[in-house]
Length: 297
Image 1 (cartoon, rainbow, N blue to C red):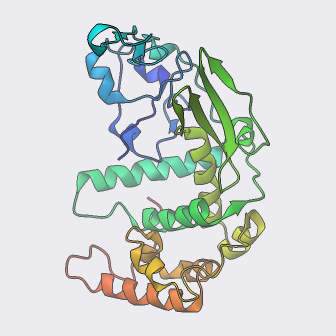
Image 2 (spheres, rainbow, N blue to C red):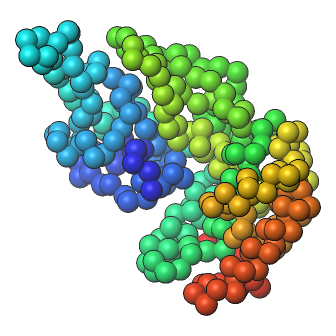
């Protein structure tokens, strides 16, 4: 789970609801209101953190407007605290989701999450493992060069730039990440840091799902992605890179994705993957065997 959660403004209207799935990294849209989630307050540009809401009125932005303190330190080194933003979060604009493929993929993620939550000892589903493998390879080791979503909100993240937002001395600017999608950065007088953007994440989720669900994942990946500089990973005398990747999602992928995985991995790395995957399936507590077919949900 992530510490910073995104939220649906419509769901925070009275009577408010707060689904636990919002804490998951893949929670990018609200299936009830068909809108993208929001991760920061446009009034103060504060990154939303639900833990801070406990010390503020429910449904109001808990961030300190313009930073926690104002002015120079006074006698004793103390500084005056600023007032909180208190923007009603249910009034924050939320952009509509119009891509049916994204909604379908998100629905499968919700179903897999519910399955895992009902039985903590079981993996959510083989489909979830396969999706996570493709998502990791897309988001960490690929550059998207073709993005054909009909959703204008998603397409805005694949453009060259978005307009900056300025509030007092703070600015939200946009820059492309390694996958080719725009990501927001908050720039303050003290420095800058990246912000979670559910729409940018949704664009990567949509790309990974499009590859996974296609009739020919290898051909689709070749059409959508630029793998120059990423193919042949974890080889060439770098065995420690592979062994250090303790969160390497392809280890849990179905064998039917092997042809796809070989777009990224060299022969040595792929052989080690198969060995480690076989060893994982031989563990007595393994919830699924190597011959388990991929599940849709």
